[in-house]
Image 1 (cartoon, rainbow, N blue to C red):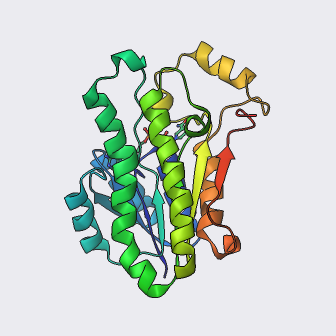
Image 2 (image 1 turned 90 degrees about the vertical axis):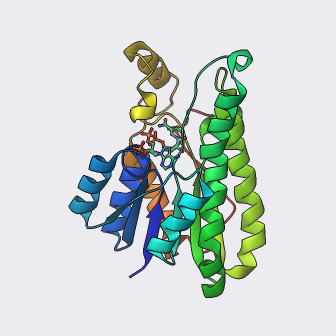
Length: 234
Ligand code: NAP
């Protein structure tokens, strides 16, 4: 049975990806940072394994891999956002966003690679954002961190392709999860109006693409950035 690790899978997009991969027959590991009960309940429901680790902490990531062993698919989904003027973005906020979104991606890929290289096989999926491509006012740290994820994805796809490892990136638009809790109903209505497909995204909209990228169906696809945004970024 192939093994998949999904980071930040206790809720939101990661949860939907864990569900989709489990349905596709993967043995799924649900990484999370705080939500013990939610992660365990999801694991029990879909027959997966909950594993707690802060992805921004390299030692914790190493210990997580000690527990789960080699994996075939890695989905680097864990991420945080911060909203505010750049002039009011403290060094601590800047570092926190980069620690989770960029260092977290680095840590999880770094630890997954030895066995993938040995096996000459693997699919790595990173999670950027529409803002990592276009930039968002009042989300400079988040936008910069998500742009870094795209650079990492493209570089690694070239470096790891000869080892049989594919690396692709998903750039969601506005997806209804806890990350959107700061948005009012009016904000959401305005975002729907700006979206050609006239609605916000659902976690499952992203999960179905992730499942495809995890599967052999995408065997000749690497180094790509896929928007899942209902046309929002056009
Ligand atoms: P969410 O609902 O806020 O869930 C975040 C998940 O990440 C939770 O499972 C959380 O675990 C976990 N997490 C946060 N920091 C972590 C850390 N240091 N170590 C391990 N796990 C950590 O987020 P989401 O909306 O599903 O977003 C998932 C990804 O998609 C993120 O990378 C985000 O930037 C990206 N994205 C989201 C949207 C959107 O509109 N929602 C748009 C574009 C991109 P706990 O439950 O334990 O806290």
